Amino acid sequence: MQDHIKQSGDFTTNGQIVRLSGAAVLVGAVCAVIAIALLKAIYLVTNIAFFHRLSFQYATPTANHLGAYMTLPPILGAVIIGLIARFGTEKIRGHGIPEAIEAMLVNGSRVHPKVAFWKPISAAISIGSGGPFGAEGPIIMTGGSFGSLLGQWLHTSSMERRILLVAGAAGGMSATFSAPVSSVLFAVELLVFEFKPRSLVPIALASSVADVIRIAWIGPGPIFPMPSLHTIPYTGYGASVGLGFVGSLAAIVLTRAIYGMEDMFRKLPLHWMWWPSLGAVAIGLGGVVCPRALGVGYDTIAAVLNARLSIDTVLTLLVVKALIWVIALGSGTSGGILAPILMIGGCLGESLGVAMHAPHPELWALLGMSAVFSGVTRTPFTSVIFPIELTHNFGALLPLLVTSCIATGTSAYILRRSILTERIARRGLHLTREYSVDPLEMHVVREIVSRSDIQVSAQVPVGHLAKLILESHADLPAWIELIDTSGHFIGAISSTATLRSAKRDPNRSVEACMERIVDMRADLPVKRVLDFMIREDLEWIRVIDHEQPIGFVSVQQLLKLRERYLLEEHHRQRTFSLPWFQRTVGEGSTASDA
Image (cartoon, rainbow, N blue to C red; front, side, top):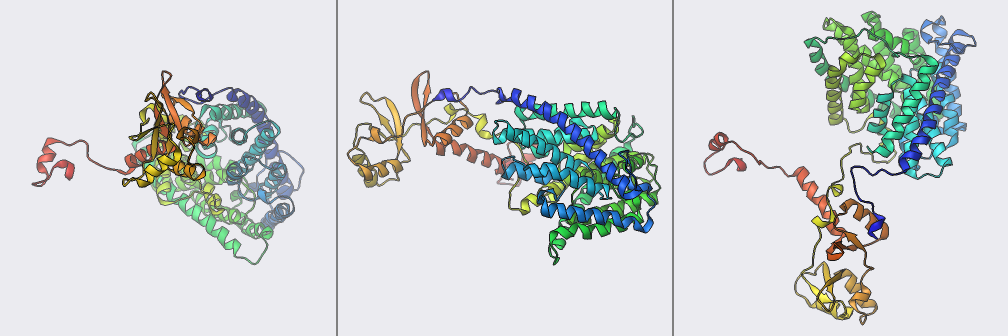
């Protein structure tokens, strides 16, 4: 039986990684095409809605001349989205990432083909008609849908489908932003729920292939070029600390506002298909006040990062974008959150930089983007690399690291759930994003093998042994060791199993009542052995070393290791003290008692 468990190593990698990598290359290529096609579809809808022309060329609502009639395209688009959600699939509602996570946790990483079809269409209509969203969320969901559908077509497990789904999501994000590294980090920190080569390699390949195709199609270079910051002044590091706190607080306010708005819409005496239309009224009015707040806003983000906007425009954009984004997202329409977060964070950072008379407001804008992004998503490493890949501003690495970590820590300390996980939690699903090495992987069976204090002959009738157990005035022994006529250990039986067997047939030998004997090597990891015992429904296994039985291990003993690590997590003590400190402790006590 021990041959069923492979010899352990640093990683649990097998031929599965080759198959998944090959599939991920295809997923990445298709996701690049999906991303480019969706962006073109958004431009088409924008041209039709705001400029009354048929064109796939880049267009933004900023330069429209509709005046007060600017309120009409968002409302019309929202009505269409409500109809699609009502009669197509409700899964198009939202920004895509929580839906992708839910598909992995609940549906075995299976996404319905309807979602793959309707999500990009609804997103193109929503964003193209002025919705204050980014294209990345729908692209992530659509790319993930393709990965899931490919996994469903192939002969794959739920975990393999999850990897392909996340590979599609990473490919979509990479093709949208030309940010292959941060797309992989985002997938690992938020979506895949593990850090293993079997998932990391396929996801990285999908992201890389998607970016290569994007570069070949659109061209190289950063999506938001800005002045290079080769030398960061000391004030910049102070700004990184301050913006880390301020950005995280802004992220907390935005998160609570969005779900507060969602709760308000739920109380309305209207079917949810009409909620996006109500939200679109706010979008239209916001567009009249500040047209730059509409659409994906990539050109506006670039303007903020280059300090090309007046402070009045930046402040107006900050307030209007935040308000209409919160209202629209709370109404349940379709669109992404990453681009709005970048715009809000950039405006917040630049506003503070101008208020502080900073010499480089561009740096403050970049740090603000990272701070709010990190506070909202709780993905610290993505929040460091993402702004760098968007701007190719590698000189800002250190302040971005400081800002991101402070924002993540503050947000995680104050707010239980993020924008990306609160919706999942409200649907009754518990989600944890903390990853650590399983303590059972760090020990081998030899460390916990045991022998019972009570030994009996394996040929004793089980009824006789049960009688001895019941007549014993001591506590019932958990396990009883069985020996042969030569006194050699052959196995074990629990007191519970003994009493149960005695009721059925008291004359059977104890050996006949014992579970089948399964031998495991003493050098096997505890985690692998526990998994095997659960799979085979075993209460104990016999441990052998150099082909000789040396004892047994029960499931209870294996789980005791977890109790040890819980104690290490919470038990505090002083294990080091200084002589001068020990003398300062009050009379009759020691430093270790203090």
